[in-house]
Image (cartoon, rainbow, N blue to C red):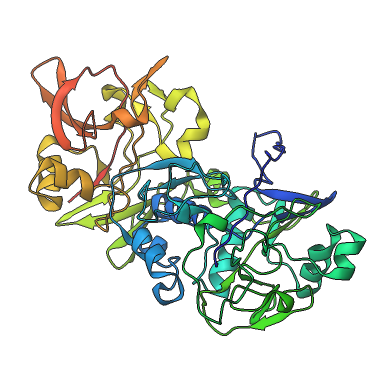
Length: 469
């Protein structure tokens, strides 16, 4: 996007339903059942989507949704590929999910005209439109929002060419429609603008001009210019882009593409579907159908795999590190008895973090064919991922291709839970004396991963199961 993302100067009313799911984050309402994203999907939202895939589906799946490195600005690509232990906990503008393991700052030293969606202390690239993605990747993002934000009650999709042309002008006044509307051209400030071709030369990020322009009456930004926007017809984009002159960026302009481009992005529309029939139930919603299944095998895709727990139908990513096979997610099995907790006693955390268990309970939560690791098995893991506790910390993060993917998630139980930034811990099956248990600690007060006996068996820690030999 050339990259002139306009900021939304107000807070969108949050439309919540019974399960407190925010369906229309970052969207404007066109009518009772139709919504549209207020800007093109930004890099911050795309990275938060990447982080969700990384934490839930693994490194291989996340790698497949990265943009084409040749079709994004080189500085943006360098930012995306930077290895970091930082964690941006701010949600993406359109996803309501944390951005994840990306640098908080970047080398861009230019100043902003106005504030953007993301705090000014963070990298400006987060606010720029995502480019360099395929038509299929854009569809996948919309489908992901349908499943995980819309809960299949709201359908997110790309607009048809006709829908795009319609909503592009619905927020304009009659005079604007007649005279032509330029939402990305600021002559007074002599700002080159995102839909203005400056001698047909690709512009360097014009950060000072980001956020300078107003939305239309529907609170929609950057409809004309900035980057062209994909429609539901593959190969057809609308609205014009920064490589064109301003008078070429209008409701009827069409841009053709056959591959990812630096000037090509997208935004979604959303439809509210009442009592939609025929939606396939998630396998985890019908665990009783799986209780007669005795399959304990793993479905492999190269280094990574997937295992289904026959007790409740939950699926876990699996990774092979050295000679060991580990679950790459915390176990989320709800035992019949024993002490266990959702983080902060909020069950919304279970899908991402699993349960916290007392040590006695932890010994009985791994499924058939798996077990609670011993101290020696944790030691072997650490030797496989790094010769120092700081290197092990880095290589056990979701941003590493080792695939173990520890998420900073705190620990505790009852009414006392530590903050995620204080680190997290995992039970072993090995006792230290008669009153202490060895545990793997990740990021407790410092970016290190090590084995300790500091925890009482009554406290709540997470469990990573290891495959039986």
